[in-house]
Image (tube, rainbow, N blue to C red; front, side):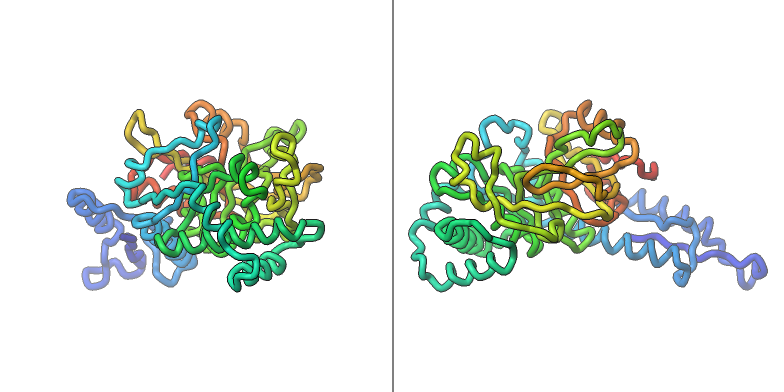
Length: 372
């Protein structure tokens, strides 16, 4: 519900022409609250539908509607178990389900078993190979590794279609490398690019965060680590993963290895990671977290910008500037949020804050946002 009130004309406050919508809007909101209806307000208390600010109000409200409708009834797939050491990505299925977000699960062995039974010359495998080659630079990647990626893509796609899933989160290490010999990052990147968000390390609430950002903006999202400080600049940091970001973030995307995993699993078993650099532009970050102890869902959202500051490292990376970053980091740490955050190349934090707080009743910290 978007509540809009027409402005009065100071030259027409006679008996015949006056409206007093300024007052009437207050009464309407009072009644809506009495009857338990959630509603959204315009930026200005009274605004004409032809005013530029109402156009912005309407665009924002459409985004809110897409987020609310998209999350209620969203179906996510969890492939495998989380890495044992990653207790940070634990979540409550029951809390998500209470808001209409359901989770389907499958053991990683089922996925790998089906992939292993596909023939190299299967038509769908060949098609996926062509898609991978068209999607990213594959120079230096062994042909057998590319075939394994293609087979994995076929099986994951079949499973998601059979279960009508909108997003996924995968056990991306270390069983995949030890038992199948590749990284799943390229396939996950391609799914995210096709607006089917795919998160690392079975971070389901990270995938929900990606989906929410995507619904608000209509563009792909990615899951990242709040990874490094940027020198002595208190308002800049480095986003990083080894990595599976959508091509929308990486104009120079290339299939590579994952050097960190390679130190223990053998770098030859990590082909499939994607590498590249995100150029300057807008960014919105968001995190949804299930608080099992208190029986609620907590979130934070905010905006900043990608910069072109130099960064010499591997994988998928971006330098990000956020006003009062140290304040944000204190909030994240004090409130025990995950080390992962979802990002989107847009400015839609206000849309998410309104959807999360007004229509889902979730706890929201809007970094540097207004206090509405």
